[in-house]
Image (cartoon, rainbow, N blue to C red):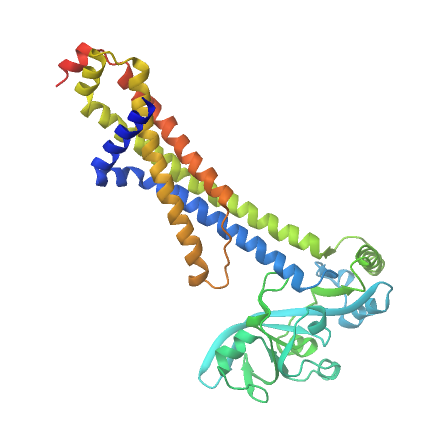
Length: 391
């Protein structure tokens, strides 16, 4: 009996392909969107974890948030931390966003990171060509720059940029080195698309204010809690207050970024779920039309012995088949979109989740059952004599 009902439902659905496709459209979009968005969210989480691994496990980030002298430290005061127990190298940084960088006829905007010679080791970056910043570059505010791999490619292609001069907001900087591809740093910005120059040179040339962010390497992973506490005590002593600064270790940063990604993904999935509900409403409307079109058929079936439950099951199975087929097509669309997305946007990886795909598929069938209840119930309540007289 159940097999016959499914066969009848498939025959009805396949018999009107265009109407079936339009009816399933909302479900297809909903399931496809959910699968794609979860894949992007999973890919982003995996990318963050990969960044964590590439930076080692003993990095601390200190953010100074105050604006007055009482809650700020200059470069030399920050470097005093390097002499404290459990603390290794320090790389204070200051950023100039949206700087206009020119070379020959190429002019683009880029971020300039002002820092010191420790930055390369602290951020686990590597030199590809030339050299990195030296202590003397910062001390004498030399106008020298190290290019991220993408920046170097943009301006020089396959040529060696070492020894060439570029203009950053009209100021001439000599290129002394190029970094190997690194990807985004722990703050989420890409070092590959940045230019690194001596901190004091950047601050003076671009008239930037105080140092906001300092990357600190603890001696070992096990030393992180002690190093974190030492830094807090030092800053509290300097500021005469425990306010105005924030010290975060890598795990906290990863958790913070991952939580933000998951929150955004959940919100987008909620929006995609609305498509499933809209699809369910579409299925209900079409099923109501189907009940009207097949009223005489219902009357005939009832007159030869079909029970109310048989008619109810027939239309519920039909609506479930409609939404289930829509779910399968949506799942295939989501898988295809997840595989194509990294090709279109190489910086955005994806990671498919079989579990989420099955959940989305099951939810699409549930939508068909829920929104098919009203038409099926209406059909099952028809009296045979009234149904046969229906015109």
